[in-house]
Length: 339
Image (tube, rainbow, N blue to C red; front, side, top):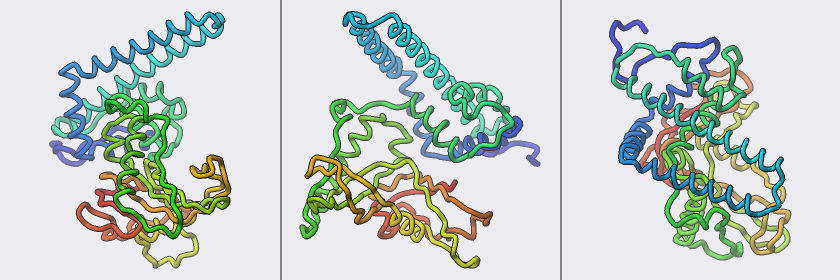
């Protein structure tokens, strides 16, 4: 930090031992304009009392379920104690997540006000230690990408998520298309079913910046080896993990599209639930494509040796909004975040 005065968006995070993985994850989120915009909306709803209404309704549901278990007559003292311990644990986690969100928002605002050249993350680290014991302590090396998705994004999402109205019955549903291989594709039907599948995902996991902006959908075609029907489904993903081929020449550059093609083709399902047979069957993967490309696309590159990131993927191959990203990325998308 050589500058005498700080600039908006330019601030360092002090390492607490070996916490560079945590600082990397925080800086990644700090520099997402879409996230800053969504958090402003969340603060507005916080001030209007919407969040308090959601919490009170959730608490009412918990009380109702506890009363129901008491009146059932079959619960023992052990199960009662276990239920109380679980409720206490949930409250502690919720309080820690809420504290994490407030600390994150405060630091985010300070970073973009340019009020400090560097920040101390000790208090945030204490909260994160409570939320995930895997990352407890200051002197262990951890994976920054895993921390970003499994800790930061997970717990921030838990605090700001909402559930679309009238979708509670979709939590246990799955929408797929069963068709004959020779049957022509109906693009409108694909779009309609993919939207239904996406509503099921939001009903299960909630709706927030992370689900809406960083999660995507595959279009997956699987053939049942018993009935020979083709099953088309739309599973979601939080990130795409790409394995770099080990036998490529050292001077060869790989495009993102080539890596996607190589890795998606390598997916092999064992048994799959056939919607036509109504049972798990041996299946054959026909193809996998990215159908819904998120605005912020997380890509994890698995490397077996140290290679400069600029030698791996040509920047011009990264898909941008308003431009066709190729046959393996069906929808238009936004930026790419490498890990």
